[in-house]
Length: 423
Length: 50
Image (cartoon, rainbow over all chains, first blue to last red):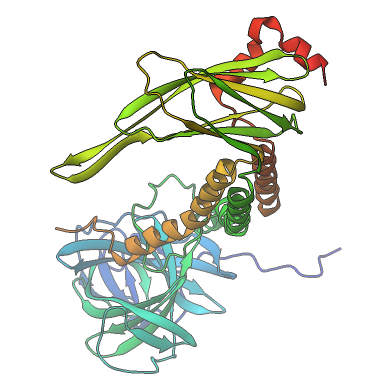
């Protein structure tokens, strides 16, 4: 009994270096032009019986997680790594190094995977030329491959390392001018060589998934930078937090404003006690024991203070519910900065009555040195507090804006506008 | 995740509305303390006249 479909066993072809005799894997297709020996740096012509073209000794392999011969799936296509090219570029007086891995797929041909500062990207040649020509202008729009890109940067890239099978015959130190435009998670590059100009379409790859696809443990340092085509992915929690904040912030704000307007409650009574030395009182009903009542004292104290002792008595039982006191002090004047004031001519007390019913408030001037001034007493009930809803609305607004703020910082880092690299 | 966050925010809004409506935490400390401790231990009696 046989399976309906039985794939052919993979066959690892190999050749011996024509310079040093070391065994080298031959994994690429026929279009690969050069083979660079991993051991002696010999560059051989694959289309001419591996004839020795030149040799680069003592090349230092650039850092990166992949090796020639590794296979994995990228963007749904099974790929094998057949070559490695180290690249160096000087951008704005700073040197950058990255590692390009030449990929080969029997069905999709050749493409590149790039490792740069912990980021992994994939790029392939495209025949989609830019819809408009012209010179590089920072952040200028560039339409190509059905997308609207933004010009990102231009630089001259130089080959600093070679290994394995490659689609052209390279030379160490070869230079190409590169113009990059971005539309995360994609990029578009114009690569201008000595004899030809090529166009490349790039895609940012998920690092964890890509390393896992190639069977590499992710033991490499985390990326310190934001890659040019790295998409902003805030995560489901932060997205939900921001979305909910955006929805609930106006709700809390409107409720808070409503409480502010109608939460002053219902005025029960208002009276002026003229002779607080003799003591005065007022009687008022409170209908709700579960809601806040408010007493407000106002006296026209100016550059003075007055102190009041108060007693709240339940009328029916003649029992004292609470005893409390409060001073009003208010000062004003002029100095070199202009007019100044300090203190307040008003004091507010909020409380919940222990039971509904009529209450009597007695009030007397409590201190012999206190100013003797008439005091207006206002009583309100059903007072509401807007502070919680305003506090909550601020929290919701922060949740909402935090995503925008985080994305702004992310974009600033992408474009190098965050000031971290300023001289 | 979105559903959980929305439920938490809705509960927080409801809680803040309830606390604002019933003035939770809005009492003057001196009066509240006086009412709680009772003037002359008579606050229990006031509760009894409800």
